Length: 432
Image 1 (tube, rainbow, N blue to C red):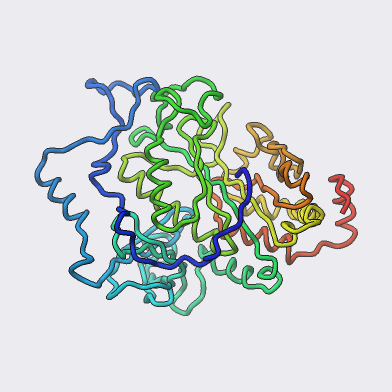
Image 2 (image 1 turned 60 degrees about the horizontal axis):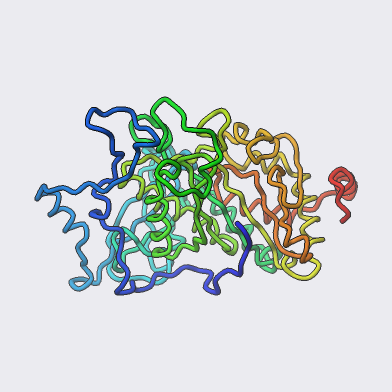
């Protein structure tokens, strides 16, 4: 992110009535976005690839679309709530729908629910019930009206968080008085890659082949350089509609790869917003007939990986003299480098090689305006003597609850020994 701005005054997302001028993502906007190939189904090349909406004259499909886009608000107070949770891999999103008797404004107004954990890899078959606790509400950009998306975390029937519930521990850290007093802000840069459905090869790439070298694709325009812009733009608007604090988007260095930014967000809200935005992106790519991957290195070789750079600041960092606080935080982060790397996403060793704008996974480093470091500090922060830091280590498939909470814990709650602190400061050339 170019800079961290002040977060919205409304930290907690609440469900509100939809503007009469707003409209959800309708199925006929897509009618399934497909990869257009020639009549002989020749391999897709970057020059011939295009995303297009296919019209259907089939009356059954047209009637189905009419029902999908039906506004039920004039006829009932009931709404549809889509309960969303994280599955057994720790990165997949699952969801199911239920009817709620009337619109709600807060998660506490929603009932708990359950699901079959044995079918998601989160519970044994003989004791498979997992309980969903509603935690955050967003407007539903697919159904519109007063319908909502509900971010949930998962518990056993006895009320214990299941192993894949990382939100629970994060909420504990963010409720610590020391952390609350510092009002931690986060801005997360979520990178992702779009793949062709049947071959699992990046969008716009010739099947089994490669496009031209990296260089012309970053923030580009043109049919031979930018692949998947409609998906990125649809996702951008859907997130704004939902109430997600999305702040921007851009095409990335590797063709077929995109990034969007969420934030600044305060505390636990950062994780809620990233997971909600990921769910919406999964739904949009589902409709478009394109596969989404958060793999941190989807293509081996001389191609950029995918990360989730996390911009972070505290109240003390944002005030006069904050650069000294930032340097102290960097020192603490250096001493817990292995702990952070172990929690920053699966397969990250394939991405953090010291090449392609990354630091080596084995060595902690920091620098001003240096994108080859573990921690980057912006020129404005150095000049103004206050601001924020950017942790460039998290992979694109990281759990935002884990990353944001660990940053707060390491910089605000964890205290190194004086000896370790002195040695680290000398090693990093930090005068703290």
